[in-house]
Amino acid sequence: MKCPFCGFADTRVIDSRLGKEGNNIRRRRECTQCERRFTTFERVEEMLPLIVKKDGRRQPFDRTKVIAGIQRACEKRPVSIATIEKIVDTLERQLQESGEREIESKIIGQAVMDALHDLDQVAYVRFASVYRQFKDINEFMAELKDILAESGNSRDK
Image 1: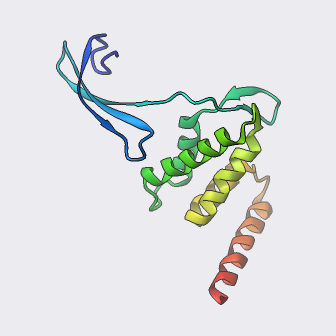
Image 2 (image 1 turned 120 degrees about the vertical axis):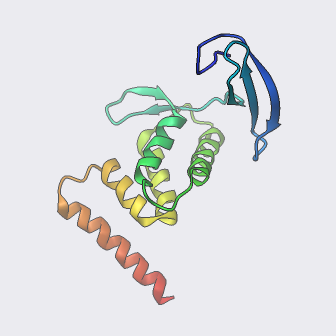
Image 3 (image 1 turned 90 degrees about the horizontal axis):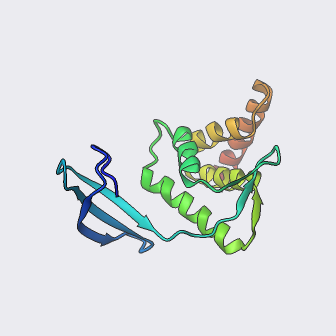
């Protein structure tokens, strides 16, 4: 593996540990040239369905893209990266278990919105505003009214 600091191709593994969920391996490595240390994660390459975009293009599921979108929605919110990764882990597991070869992007977007709705309503609205591409303030306000109505109902219980 190449060193991320100097680009040298020879590194050695110092330590290996099983990840928390048991589905990846954390490796501590050291570059034999610059002697700097870094961490890598190794996980099984899973067969995930192709994502069918709104315009019909197909592309592989990109975990980092989904994490980045959720992180943007959760910016300055009390949501940890571990929680975000759990959301994406759950989503990946659902995609694998579906057995589908292709899945529409709107299903992934809706799954993320459902997870954020239960987790943090501000992050939910942020994600929804980008994902649903609200055309104007009225669409945005309608979504907020729905959330307020739901939270009012949950307080009445």
